[in-house]
Every structure is written in structure tokens, then in C-alpha cells.
Image (spheres, rainbow, N blue to C red):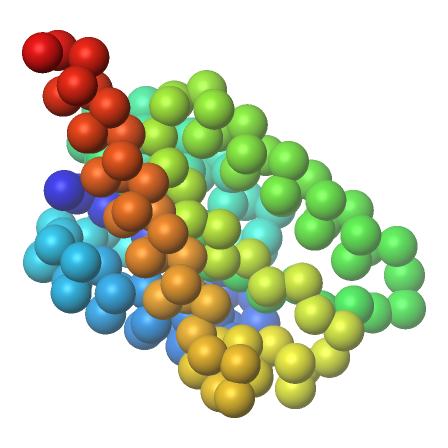
Length: 146
């Protein structure tokens, strides 16, 4: 399997740790070196970049990684909601799994805890979920062909 990982530079201290977990999980899960990593400016750019990656036909799955941390304005809700909606739309449009590694946290501390701290590594978990979904879809295709 070939995987695309798209990661946001915004809140890079968090997203780099998510990326480390995702790449490790993908390597252990059967992708080996067949992992392409693309950095984008922020979370809002994740869906369109995954969409374009899937349109190439090169990928069996994607993992989208970002960290949106609440501030004093409505920006948090808008970015979190639209990025979530966009990633779901991309997965359904292409019929391919998108591991959802977008943290939506109240504080930087919460984000760091979920990026390899006390709460685990949500980047690794997103990669594992995408791998499992890709295997399930491939199995469904195999069953339909028989």
C-alpha cells in the first residue's frame, strides 16, 4: 500500500510529533517506505491537498494531520468544522480512507498530550485507522470480484 500524509505547519511543535507517530505506524503497518509526506500551511489546506493526492491515483490511503487550538475568536470553530467536513467529503468522493489526525484542543498542553504525551499519539492512531480501513475496503473488493 502507498500512503499520503498531509501535515499542517501551523502548530508545528505538535504536528511534527503527530507526523512521527503516523510515519512509524504506517511503516509497521505494511507501507514501508511507500509514504509520501506533504506539508501545507494550515489545517484548512488539508482536504484539498488530500483530494489532489487521491486524484493522481497513486495512493491507497491518506492521513491528515493538524492541530487547531482554541483562541479568543470564532476562527477555531470555523477551521475545525470545515476541515472535518472537507476531509469526510474527500474520503467519500474518492472511496478511499483518510485517517483523521486533526487535533481540536482547548490548550497547547492538551495538544501536546495527544501528540505523543500522556494521551498517546493521535497521529499514529489516525494512521492505524486508515490502514485498517484500506484493508477492509480491499477485502470487500476481493469478495465482490469472487
